[in-house]
Figure 1: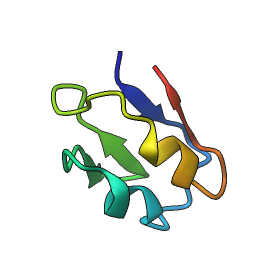
Figure 2 (figure 1 turned 45 degrees about the vertical axis):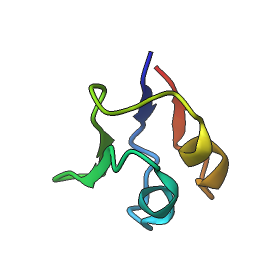
Figure 3 (figure 1 turned 60 degrees about the vertical axis):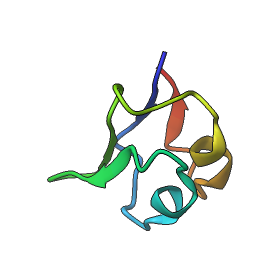
Figure 4 (figure 1 turned 30 degrees about the vertical axis):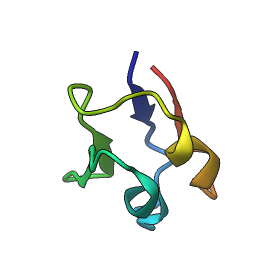
Length: 56
């Protein structure tokens, strides 16, 4: 199951830089994770400074 980004996202971009699959992109209100590309590595979750990312 892919990770998801909540509305706590501040659009800092920290998660984008660590995603090995380039599954994270900038959405209209927050960053979003493409579930087709996400391999559940969890790197983005540990990198998020506001804890906006969790397992979906």
